[in-house]
Length: 284
Image (tube, rainbow, N blue to C red; front, side, top):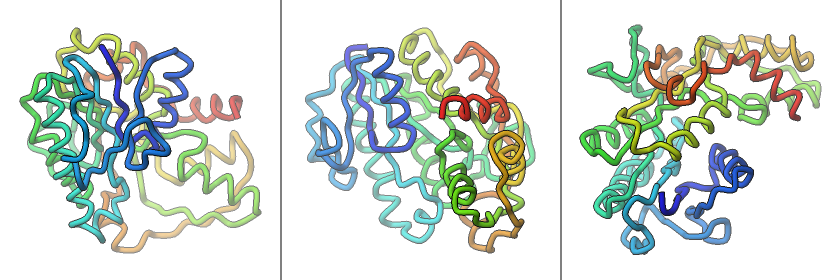
């Protein structure tokens, strides 16, 4: 690899990746919609303004930029589509035309709630929600491109993901946590995702697979997580509530997903979320 371009460098996952890159002494260039927070500015509403001359053959683009809220994608479809599909496709297409390698981050929501095996080779797949439709649109557009690879992420767990932040807040303020149930994902530990990125950076040409599902080894509901929190971290008082109807229109209540290839990529089994909570507690 000549250079690594991190697109969407202000995202939750990007910040974790930047910390790891710095520890590993990787050389990389940050790209975001705000130039004061990154090395280069990219406005996906105006991709033509980006200076593509900075990209060279065999560079790597790690594409994390997106409107990732399923609710926002539903309520502001046209605006979200312009960024998540139109702008994203144009940027990736221009990059591939320059023989750049592209790692695109998709979502497990492309599988909808179909109760099947749902691994990397499953076809057809039926997305649920506008956000999932947008991600699958980009996947399908570049599905035959040899320099294009996809990480499909399930819910990415860490000590400071949104739900864990909510539990911390409820604990600290002695507030009763409202737990939406049912709402279940095959959660994946953030360090498994980071390890996968680094492995692929180091052996891009030796990996023939295009799609990797990052989904962990077991299903966890939000109720499971709060119970693990109470067991491992501290006591949080909570009450179970059923999500409003519109909540499930934007995303499935449960996603069945498996992976044939990701554990081979990262070189070990997926981390169990219970173990991940213990690791994160020690580190925080």
